[in-house]
Amino acid sequence: MAAVSGLVRRPLREVSGLLKRRFHWTAPAALQVTVRDAINQGMDEELERDEKVFLLGEEVAQYDGAYKVSRGLWKKYGDKRIIDTPISEMGFAGIAVGAAMAGLRPICEFMTFNFSMQAIDQVINSAAKTYYMSGVAAQHSQCFAAWYGHCPGLKVVSPWNSEDAKGLIKSAIRDNNPVVVLENELMYGVPFEFPPEAQSKDFLIPIGKAKIERQGTHITVVSHSRPVGHCLEAAAVLSKEGVECEVINMRTIRPMDMETIEASVMKTNHLVTVEGGWPQFGVGAEICARIMEGPAFNFLDAPAVRVTGADVPMPYAKILEDNSIPQVKDIIFAVKKTLNI
Image 1 (tube, rainbow, N blue to C red):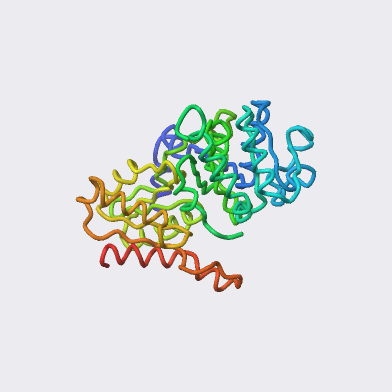
Image 2 (cartoon, rainbow, N blue to C red):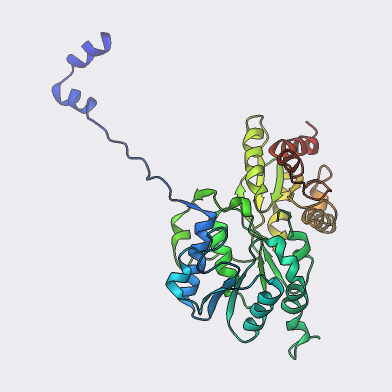
């Protein structure tokens, strides 16, 4: 009552000022786009932009792709540019390599990247080596990042979210070199916020440049593809305990952006790498080796720690599969181990 009576005794103009109604506007909800739709949009824009671009693979045309990634493209561009192939990965991968040599820009889609091993000769011995052997120079659920990242002559990108997927697929199409795009099948139906700049037809993500997804001061956590999301979840949990993780999304496996990783390690003095692949000769091992060989090694206050998939073939049973790939709890454990807390 005291507050009300105080208002009543004030001049009318002053009271009306105190009682003025205020409106607070919130920002519009961010656009949500699935990784599937982002890849589709990226391919559509490049097909529209450059008539030399075409898509080939098993069921990519009339069926719209096994995962519907190429939905609508056949109806829009027709049989000459969206091409269904026989079940012969070696055959249509060879067609793609030959078309690229002739000046076209093929998008060669394997129904699942595990099937790329059927065409490994075309990928490694034709796509990767042909440039160096020519007249202008010297003659289902596995992570192949280290396999392809090991091979000179290839560029290898590994998108995590929808923004990565669109920006990297467009950059890969425009690149004059063979680019391996490691799409994670489990991410196709996952929606992510799609910023306005990613909706532009001119949106590209440069190959060879990582992104800091979360700033931190205590430890650097480096990852790529699906595990980036696990790293961010772990960082959110650790933040409540006073540990601030700097999470780096690699985006590109080869060439690797060591400059961003080294700068972060020099700031945080600790390093954890996270990947879904096997531990031996993996991406994390390469990162740790380069840190040891470079200037950032002298800034480490503790040994670097790797979080990887289990050193076993991927099992079929769901519970065994979950225990074979890194989980949030594994990342939290590794961070605490590194920080000795």
